[in-house]
Amino acid sequence: MDLNKLMFDFLAEEGFRPHETPFGIAFKNEGFNFLYFKDEDDELYFRLMMPAIFVVTEDNEDTIMRVMNDVNGNIKVIKLYTMDIDDEEGKTERSVWAAFEILADTTPELKDFVPRAMALLQGARVAFLSKLEEVADH
Image 1 (cartoon, rainbow, N blue to C red):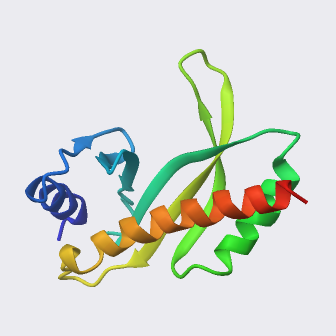
Image 2: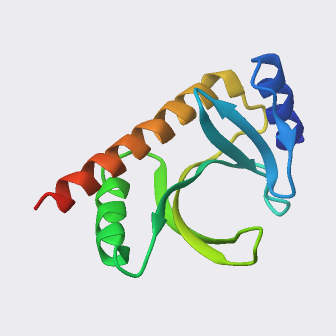
Image 3: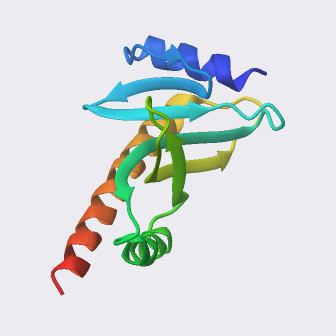
């Protein structure tokens, strides 16, 4: 089974216009970017991500970590964490990413969980930003 090919075909059939990247498959839904990462070492590992939902700086890092921890404890199968990415100028930027991670079975029905994964990721983004705003107001 090639989960990467299944995911690409599923997204194309659903009209998402996916494209291959060095990391996996990128696509948009409702104006949001998503990335599906292929794990060469585990063909059943399914990780769909919403990249760079908030920039982390030295000034906000402690608050970001507390808010990520709160969201991680309240939303099923979602993990928020930070990633460092180099921009076009070679400058490293740290940002918060949301990930939906599961172990698929050997005959996954992507229509059964990909739409929910996207909804959970969007919900995690909203929860993160809302909690961040709430903390900033205090």
